[in-house]
Every structure is written in C-alpha cells, then in structure tokens.
Length: 111
Length: 112
View 1 (cartoon, rainbow over the protein chains, first blue to last red):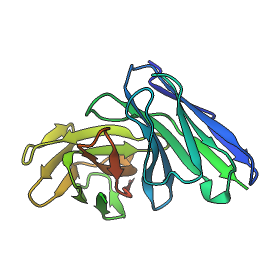
View 2: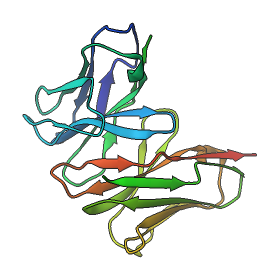
View 3: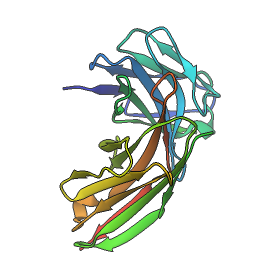
View 4: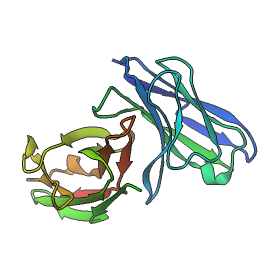
C-alpha cells in the first residue's frame, strides 16, 4: 500500500530558484494538505484542498502556491525560494473527519 | 485562532518508567483531538478522542480527553527505548475541511 507519496525526498535550492513538490495519494481521499515543520514550531498548515477543484490558505501561505491537479494529486510550488522556506514539508490526506495520513516528507534547504 | 500547547517540551526517562504527556487546547469549533508519534519521518497516528472521559488504550499507551477543562493526557507505561520520539497533539475543528492544528510536540527520550 503506497498511501501518500511525496517527491522529492531531499532538495537544495539557491535563493530565487523555483520548484514544485509533488504529492499523490491512492486512498481516494477528498481532502489533501501541505504542512511545513520547523524546529520548535510544530507542524503548520500552508494550504489545503477540501475537495477536487478547491484550494484554501492555511496558517502560513505566503510564498507558496498550490494546484489540486485531480483527486489524487496536490502539488506545492515555490516560485522564488527564500532561506526562510528551509524546512521539512509534509503532504497529508484524509477522508471526512478521519485522521490524516502523512507522506514521508521533503527536506528542503534554500541557500 | 486555534491553539494547542503541549508540556513538557522534552523529557528524559529510564526504561521502565511511566510518563504522562500533556496537551491543552483552545479551539473555536472542537471536533476531536488526535495524538501522533513522530520518529524520524512522517507522524504516525496513535489515537483520536472525541468524547470526554473515555480512555483509549493501545498496549502500553493510553489517552483520555477532558472537554470541560480543554486538555488531554497521553500515558506511556513501562517505557522502552523504542518509545523515544516526538509526540504530537493536534485538534480538529468542524470547519469545511479536516484542518488539524498541531502543538509543538513533546520530545521523549528513553534511556537504558
């Protein structure tokens, strides 16, 4: 069972570069999420998609864009990376009011 | 703004000890509280609590919710080195999507 799959697992960017983090889930979940995790800050919600065709801002959306490509896929784009975006990024999905299932994370460093 | 506070921030215990982790919350439209364990990578689900006073148990781990006082505790008995991890508490609101608000976590280290 694949569950939630994120790519890449690691990435190093220079300031100003752009990149897209990919996420796909095979559990037929309606809702998908992007979180970032920083030391001492816990997990903070960047964007979420309650269903295919909808996206909404979370707690820390600045500097990011998202696309819900279809029910399975939810991508996160950094248009112009900044050192403050150095973090571990997690994608997650869930169905209804159930628990979130997390991907294995992407460790991003912006130099 | 929804808020989740966990204590202590970190804890070091000896194998065999019993530990209690705390989670207090303020959320506008509470639906449930979840506990996750995070070792190296992705958080893994432990418990979801919706009703007050009903203890959830899984082996040596148990958790209970107090909706009146707005807190939950996670107990681990007879701790083992494999319990070393960050334990995350999160609350789920009743909004459009299942948005979780996380606490900063409690880092537990179990030593021999």
